[in-house]
Length: 170
Image 1: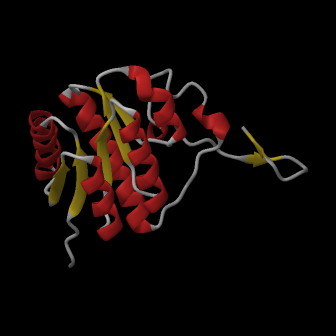
Image 2: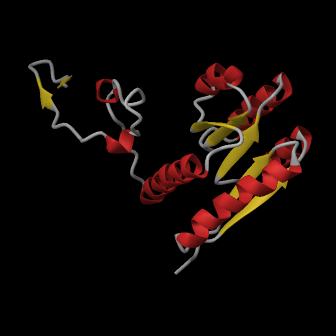
Image 3: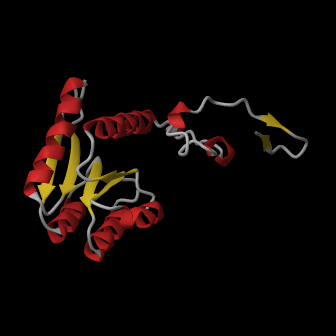
């Protein structure tokens, strides 16, 4: 049986922050009995180059300038399916994160509980992808999910009934 190693990219100018966040992420996967590695980057140029040379399971990118925003867009262009977790010390980049369809947005320093929740969601996404499970929720099923502090996985699936037109009724 082939054991897949999860490979994460981590960009933050602050080495101590990179080390602290990497430690929590690696501990999460060790506790799940999974192999993971984190490649750390202290500048955006080397992060972009790494994405051109290799593939990553997910990328964690700290944003505090338009340089990092531009870097995130370049990564999204190179690897559109790669989950992007944005980290910032303010909410200033949250709208950009929405446009980038970021997997999550962490205010730094991130709370370990929030990090584990994100990693759990990421693990479920990766598992679904490995099974080829591309189920999508209808937009109506997502109403209020974020406001309630839930993830899409927490929404009970609704039985879809069809009208005469064949369109789903929610």
